[in-house]
Image (tube, rainbow, N blue to C red; front, side, top):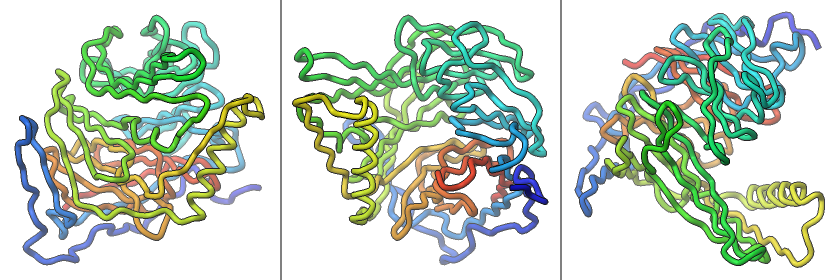
Amino acid sequence: MQHSAKWRIAFRGLAILVLVASATACGGSKATMQEIDGILHVMNPADPLRPNMNIEITEYIRIGEDDGEDDYIFPGITGFIADETGSTYLLMQQDDDVRVFNPDGVYSHRIGRQGQGPGELFQAATINFGPDGNVWVANAGAPKITIFDRAGLYLRDIRFSLIPPLMVQTTSDGFMGLYVQPRQIVPNEVFEITYQLRRFSAEGDTLNTLFSTKIQMDVSDLQLGGLQDQIPFYTIDDQDRVWQTRARTDVFEVNVWNPDGSLDRVIEKEFERIRKSEQEIEEEREMVMRLITAQAGGQLPEGVNIDFDPEPFRPATGLPYFDPRGYVWVQVTKEGTHNANEFDLFNLEGEYQRRVLLPGVNNPVWLSFSGDRLFVQEGDPEVTPQVIGYTVTFD
């Protein structure tokens, strides 16, 4: 199928006012701050502090096609970043390389290639700009982070002894990563899984552990429903603090960790739990069972019983994202739709400012900020994989 207007550069001239002055002039209620057991708790009401705060979000570009030149067709995007000029760096899931596009959405060049040698990527998982300004790619299939300059020249690897960290994000002087460590408690029967969010130096040395939790599983009767809320999602602000959420359904909570590993504050917000529909629960159950059976080679081992009963409520929070203008965007779900394209904005003190709707995107799976620009990855599997660019203006 041919397009008269390329998907990769679809300029939108219409500005969309996402947040309007729809509340009273006096604004919303303020958060209360209380120290509990030596930790600051910021407790926000359901109503935002700045309900009349205007944000103008204008879509101006889309990168990605369902038909056309190979460089613009994305079989799967693992992650992406945007630099200070508005150029985007897209990490490809199947090709294990990085495709670079200039600020106008025009393909520029590729970085890396598939393999396990120097300058090669294997099951590339995350991409970031490192503290040195270069492109850092973490590999899930090889114990290393591979570093390139922005033109694509291979510079070096940061290597690990056995297990590579996952969900890597960089700090001002190093990086963070999630370690997942399985251990047998009873051989072939009971396993323990430890999740640790660690801080590393720029050379890969462990500095401290910010978050750690353990889960035990009986192989003969796997209960999977409560596992997802143990995995931490996080973002890093300009003070190198880590803002960490989990997919919990019982509480809206964000933990903020200092660089030394101490807990800086706990941010909470009043919310109403959103129950999943019966269809949503059944679809989730079927999807998980298909994945487990496929990973087992098409048939579960004899004597293994997997009981997956999906959580009946939706998570209160999704992924957090740091906006260099001094906000953290926390993804939320809403009643009556599966499209998680709304975000709660918090200032760096943890006060709830306003809810934001991202127009024209379904279930965004990654956000990247660059000045007044915001880039979002389309997350709907039924839609052509794309990265959407917006300009974002605060009043």
